[in-house]
Image 1 (cartoon, rainbow, N blue to C red):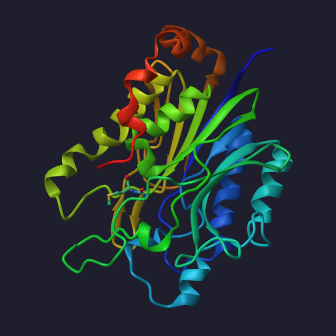
Image 2 (image 1 turned 135 degrees about the horizontal axis):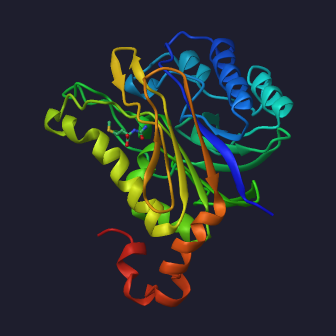
Amino acid sequence: MTRAFTAAAAQLGPIARNESRASVIARMVALIERAAAADCRFVVFPEMALTTFFPRWLIEDAEEVASFFEAEMPGPETRPLFEAARTHGIGFYLGYCERAAEGEGADHLGFNTSILVDSSGVVVGKYRKVHLPGNAVYDPALKLQHLEPWYFIDGDLGFPVFEMLGGRLGMLLCNDRRWPEAWRMLGLQGAELVCLGYNSPAQLPDNPAQNALRKMHHLLPMQSAAYQNGTWIIASAKAGPEEGCDMMGHSCVIAPSGELVALSAGLGDELLPYSIDLDATAEYKRFFDFKTYRRPECYGLIAAPHK
Ligand code: CDT
């Protein structure tokens, strides 16, 4: 049986602070329809795909903060996305803010989460972001706030891998892509396709010397990770000028060779389809052959708590 199929990054352009779920979902359904026309079996939406990237503000209004979190998935507002995907037989990865269950979160409302949904609309897997970047408290000295640790509970599900599309799929979220340990956890479980959504500012106003390096620092860790773990990667941006912050585009598909094989052209809603073959991972998995060549007895520091 062939394990080749067309999959796509489904990049989203900016989402306004007051944009309704219905409006965002309509944009996502339009991308699913384009994916169907392109014969896709799977699409990858961004991190926090349903809302603006609200951790750029310290929002004191509890009702507004709550409005960015989903109490159920699918819920009444997100169900049309699941229905459209089922109608067209397309599975998807979706990043969203998950409201914690009773007793799960003390000071925070919930998790920065992603899910895998199969072509019949069933949620087959969940991941909660492990590497939450930015500050746990508002720092008035900063031009750009990034308050994920203020809003979210640390991910507590590890780095699970799920059977889907005839292969093994893993998930990461944004800043996770900069951490080789995250990729290796998925590689060790045989991941063949890793989906990643992100919200990355194109510029860092508090460290402008980094601006020219932003795209390279986005792609470099993923191209390395794809090669070193023998996996496909589909990475999908929330892109463009969002509420005064320029968000990086560069949604992409990376092959298990480490080659960048598809890159988005713009900063709006955009579908980036690519024909991927999960069997192309085998050559790289054979080369690195973890079972034979890894030396975990030499890697203790990697898993030891930082001193
Ligand atoms: N969403 C997210 O994880 N963004 C981080 C930005 C950190 S710098 C402000 C990223 O790694 O792109």
